[in-house]
Length: 289
Image (tube, rainbow, N blue to C red; front, side, top):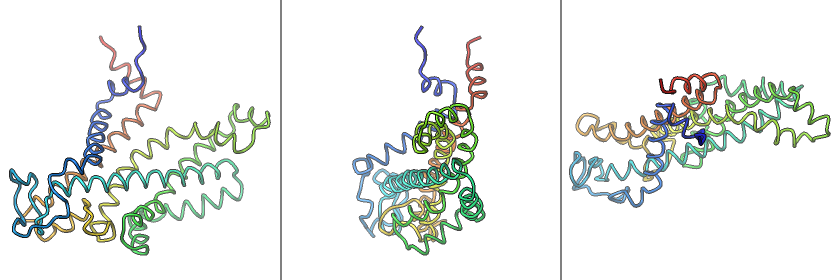
């Protein structure tokens, strides 16, 4: 009997994982193919068609400048996913590197990294730090990514430090040291693979936080520069038309909600699946009776 692959088993036993993965893939496809799917130029204005309700020609209506909301929502997905992926990669690499080095070498270096740097960043609410850095750096997509990387690396560093400190005294690490393995080889070949699982879960949930943070910064005018579409900027533009054109608020808000919910569901499902006890329980519950 052919053994089922772990991915298929994950999809079969995790309902939340299936929904989270399906919505995530849908958002990625919409973002990638937005130039071919979007019915209009997201920046094209038509004052004669301003504030139209959803209809056959404009499925999500138009905004106060007559721009097609559906096209702007699709291109807004590109911005949100680009920021999310860039922030997770940037903060993850920086945090994983600093946390791993701190946990491995210990001593005064570890105390400085943990007590001074990590605790300093984690002691402030992340969104307030992001607003401060974004206001200092100025608006722009690259500035938003940089601000969120600066404020987001500490969580990955603390997680990586804890994992490395737990693994560094195990027998296989001591055996590698006794065989003359260098610090770089031990870190890259032995410690890093044993820290990736929790970091992967943190990164998946961090995608949701990065998308929400980018939307918040764009809503406050500290995000992407107009006329680049962004879900947060669309919500900011819709503030004055909350009652006479509610579709301007509903559709970008649904996009943010779908993205954040999908990545949170996927992250929770991965956390449950990668935990051996929970995985065994899910597999047992799925067995035929």
